[in-house]
Image (cartoon, rainbow, N blue to C red; front, side, top):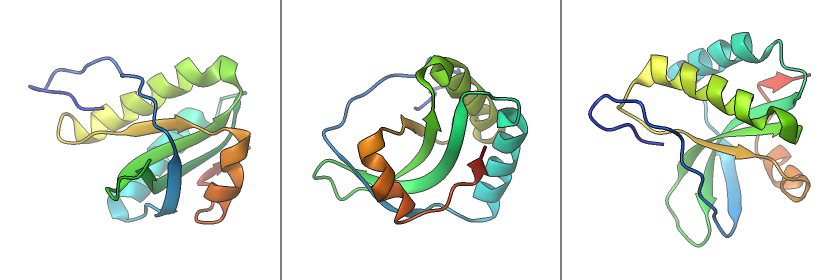
Length: 120
């Protein structure tokens, strides 16, 4: 998600043919981002786990930072809004954030490369 000219845009939904989780995304800034997300997510009844990882889409070798949320579908909209609110306040228009809602067939791939920073 990119915001141009300092204006916050609505998230765009994209579909990718495949996702390969590569590694956990971690650093000082990422830990602060995760801490702020924890504060927002702690009251969620739909979120089971959350990860911040680097991933590849399809055949591309480009790495993307992805917030991966394992949640009941009924909570997707609220979780997405909470995550973008935290992201916007920290990074403004300088960066983008991809959010992926985990499907069962993706679980093995993500648990092989990262530990959740949130777990209910």
